[in-house]
Image 1: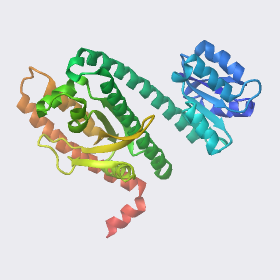
Image 2 (image 1 turned 180 degrees about the horizontal axis):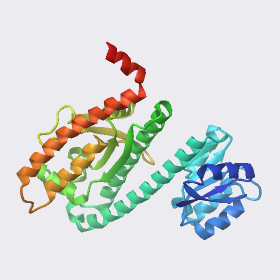
Image 3 (image 1 turned 180 degrees about the vertical axis):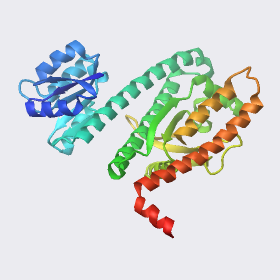
Image 4 (image 1 turned 60 degrees about the vertical axis):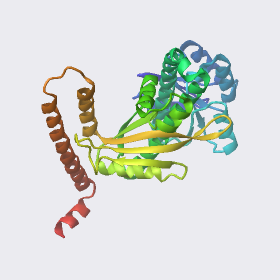
Amino acid sequence: MQKILVVDDAEVNREILCNMLKNDYIVEMAQDGEEALYKLEKCHKETAALLLDLQMPKLDGFGVIAHMQKNGWIDRVPILIISGERAVEVENQCFQLGVSDFIHKPFEASIVKNRVRNTIEMFNRKNQLEIRLEEQSKIIRLQEARLGRLEPFNKMMIEYSSAIMEVETRLKVLNAMFSEEYKRNPFESIKSRLKKTDSIYKKLERKGYPVTIENIREYVVDVAGLRVICSFPDDIYRLAGLLIRQDDIILLKEKDYIKSPKSNGYRSLHLILSVPVFLPNEKKYIKAEVQFRTIAMDFWASLEHKLRYKKDINNTEEIEQQLKACADSIEALDYQMQEIRNKIDHPAETALGGNT
């Protein structure tokens, strides 16, 4: 279990938050900023999140944040502010200082749990992306002569990783709102990746373009890639529709392999999007590919991927035929399960439809 630290001078607030979170996390508590820093000094590397009140005696929340910035801890520990205020200027000040999110009083258990979980997940994913970027940088140094300069490529890859985080955030917001309204989630998981440097080179070479920053931006649309795994086909279309209807998301291209499957049986909805990324000095639109699949089709695709890239497989043609038959069965099963879900969720409507 991950460790979180709850810092609030009001004991009742500490106890309420502890009771809400203790089944999912190891909860440490501190009654003021000085105690919080004492505990962070010992275990900031093991702390997954800090829930921090702003108004406290001895040392307030802003003092804690300043000390964390000075020691570099703010890059390792995400901060969620515990606040009874909803003043815009206070929240903006906190975000500018590097705070990740807010938990407002009075506390609602589901909101608290979701905000803590999402913040930890996003922070971990950000750190993983930074690690991947560092790995990419090592490869790029070997290829530096082909791209000319290292700095523009690194900057571009940061922009693509930011686009991934932007799309992930929006999908998670839609997921939370859908869950609140319909009491279920439209997707099961999100997987993301930055395209490997060698793969970028090879793709441009296959297309017949020189390897340049400009050609990567123009002709490689899947440098930033996300895969959204849904339970049912109608959730795919509903979620994709909600995403592309956002007024600052631009749909560049859509490939619907659910309605028109590939010859091997593959079924998925692919969207090429132009996503706004907010950089220090500008707002920039970055391309990202988002694929939507059902759970069963994602399992199928992993097998098909092994067949496509694994060498020295006997009876390839026979396996392809088996996979095609499985894909057709998966489609039928997906829609049967969707129909059963509809009967469970809307029994009156289903019964009325049956009588007509």
